[in-house]
Image 1: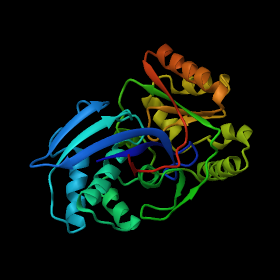
Image 2: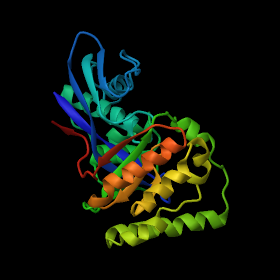
Image 3: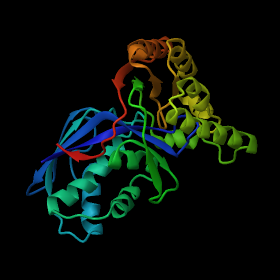
Length: 293
């Protein structure tokens, strides 16, 4: 059997730890019961553990324990198409995959709330996990199970400029301010509200302002060579909105189909001018979360 789990981009600038979007870019996990745990990896993440310390295997074992199921070792083959440690939810795909594979191996069903509780033990940010589970654009209300899913414009292309270096979530979180001003909070609330309106009404002319941020991008940009130049390059080529994807270092741009390649090339060129090689992936929003294939 095998399942696919989507990548995600989160925050959208102003929606820090709140907004998440599943992408038409997937990690695929093939699995079968075995006499011991074995892991093969194809694609990104060749340095990931290939034994019982592999993240998906750890989640799988914890899910068996949490749901009261007898642990059955599995043979796992990971087909990784989502770059690792780049702010695209690669860890979330493994966590969601571990939960779902546990249930499939044992032929058991549990509520979404129970699935998410296990997943949150390994990833405390639901804005990554929920899109991987349910697909689409989600607004996460808190760290438990409260979220809403809304339609995301299908005509928007999502362009990812992915620099060659890794940036862990822990490092990206370490630079955040523990206290922020009331002025900056109000700034983000206004623009996060504007973002929802812009998406609902297809007012793409508002997106550049709607993704403006004062809570995380200004401080995280110090960890990403050329970040501000990459943003400017994307806008020069006609992107509607450009922002840091998740905790970074990838940069995400929303644009029309005809502008996508030019936007990607411009952002990659800006990274190269800053001394960093970058890969470009053109993708789309996906309304599908984890699913059998």
